Image (cartoon, rainbow, N blue to C red; front, side, top):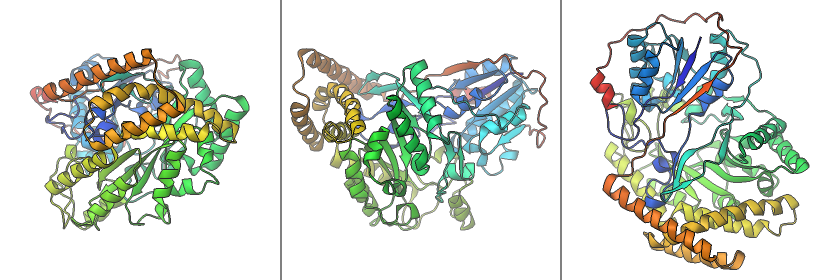
Length: 556
């Protein structure tokens, strides 16, 4: 047997029969720094779940990430595979459908496995052909299909957290790793697709020792010491974090992390200095609204929390939801202005998005609010809402969203420079701190400062508003005090970066700023592949649908 695990095919973020140009395959450029021009972060992120499943099966497995349709079709026709798993989210429903129909047409003997949030789409049983449907955690599901022990310990893959990274047109090393301690979230907010999809929280790494050992593997094998932690609320298990700090201090092996966290979890800490000791450099926090309409945010002073985190060198991304039931064309500005006034390093404005499987979807479905004729590919939260709102048309929702991002940029300047200011504040805070581990963390902040200072000349030349120029003056003053004047070599590098950035601005104006994630193929070949494993019987017979035209697929 041989398994192919694949994400959906490209291109992405362009208008085709399968895509919308308003949903780019870039987290930051799509929904965080999208209105910041040349200052916007340009990163791609791998499909982590595919690699996690491939690492934890014994059957020979190939992972195909962001393929072209032609590459996917060639793999289907190769005759190598007995099973193909397609992972997709709701906006990519039509792509998954086209891929499954291609398998049925070109190689009907192959077993089709569908997984990911897209599997929650109503009526999927009659819309996409499949043999197995995975709704929820995938490792156990896949092991059962191939007759493997579902309770075997999880082995975490070693993969980069992001790749194809550029800042202001300058390539940035792919030197971060990803850690997945668990999936889902116990808070289960009504709009949250992940917590509903996984039915709560499923841990993979339950102890600080397990996380520490994984970090050591990354450093020993790949030289990586900085990690994105893909867990909805990493600090929800405080003992895991405490043990991790103790092990880093005991063995003098220190790592840095970016995490997701709810405000309530942070407020429960005895001191935010613990986060500095832990090596937290980035926190993504759901603020949602100025109103205390979510239990997790009750009584939280977000202004103080964001300020205190940034003062310690911890960059903060806050996320807010627009177009909920309380919003009018006047009151929505209260939440937008609140989000801007927090002055976090990054702010994500997201349209309220009822997705299948969530409590929000069920509520809106019962109330008849869902606009079910809107194609799935337009249901992504970064252009127009797909439900009826008494105060906003779909076009209104697009215009208000753009205005929110533009206001944040105008008032607070580029996120890149906010991050610079946070690192300077953190270095100032940590370098003479009474705690030895906090003092040690100042070195990583200084490394970041020395890297980021190369972008100052470009930032000055390409500044688009007065806030940016004010930020630059503040940064230069702090650099002179804390680090000193740049050397001749640094000045030369700064000039080169400015030239690259100017060239990138010109290229974007002439040719547009579309970027595609590079396709990746990874092979997992294990000698213990269970060639004769007994297959799990499909829950239902496959559904055969008409084949899409080749011309239509070429356009996708």
